[in-house]
Image (cartoon, rainbow, N blue to C red; front, side, top):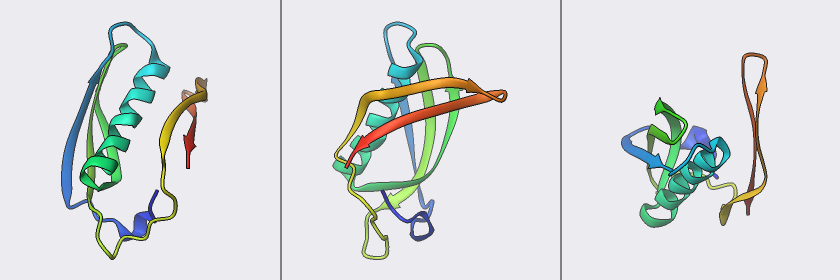
Length: 103
């Protein structure tokens, strides 16, 4: 987790994920795990994300950010995205999401 004011949207990554059966919570969990993988494998720090395609079993999103460098202020290291207490529920015409990260 970084101070977003220190991260610039200089590079773009496309993150696509499919699951075998409809499960919105699993789809969100796996997509967040893909973002975490980008951080761990490429030291890519995202600062913006936009979902461009979404169905019951697939999500495609564009993530903007940049590789970690000395100017980026890291606040916490996320060790894992967890399924513990993960929730998605309707809220005023949108969705309310609860995600717990292991830090």
